[in-house]
Amino acid sequence: MTPLHSSCALTGATNLPTRYITVTLALCAVGLAGIYLATHAIDLECMTRSCEFTQQLLDMNGEGNLPAWFTVACWFLAGILAYFIAQVDETPHQHAAWYGIMVLSLFFSFDEMTMFHESFGSILGSSIGKITGVGDILFYKWLVYGVMFVVVAGLLFLPFLYRLPRSTRWRIIMAGTIFLIGALGIESLGAASQAGMIDLVQGRVWPFAIALEETLEMLGVILLIHALLHHLSWATDRKLPL
Image (tube, rainbow, N blue to C red; front, side, top):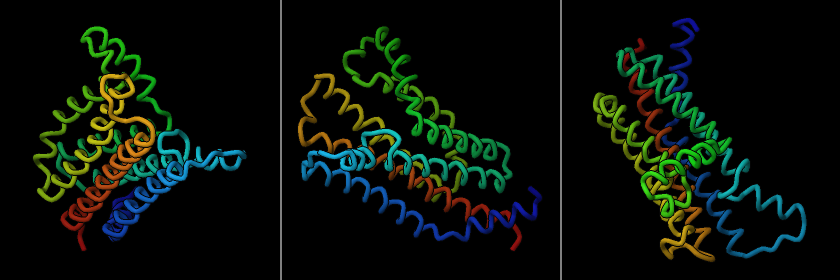
């Protein structure tokens, strides 16, 4: 891509209404959670294939359905935005870090589509669980590997966050916090409950726990998209000629 074409693409990206995109995506996430809860609230017993297909299509605890593909698309969008920012940010360390965020976002998009973390994480988590003795506590073995990944990634990206403008930095921190509360926090409570360690989620309460977990994960990614759009606008105005 030539510099002129790159500049045009970046300028077009920053003209996108950031608040409108963020609110629209957030409403979609909340709407998916509301529909999922509604299907459980009415306690509908499916007697036809079409009814069963609809429930599977909207199941926030399922795979290859509408909520999953929505999350896949959000992570993919975050990766694309990080790529555009990397084209603008000429600071060597920041330039590489934005490519790192792009790779992580695209990996999370792939992971959401294939559920890679559950298969790989279960193998790794089981091995670590035998060594550390936490195997009986964590029903979802991938949580062990997930915590390790978060710690390592957090340490690696700390200098990058420190060099960011304050507004972008706190937006990314808020997005990551909300995502981790859902992905690791609530997921850990649900895992401990299913393992019989605590009596927390049973019966009709379980769908609410699932909806809360998945909604927080979606909102975390959406806030990341908001932060990337905000920073892309700032970086483009700062680097490109009017």
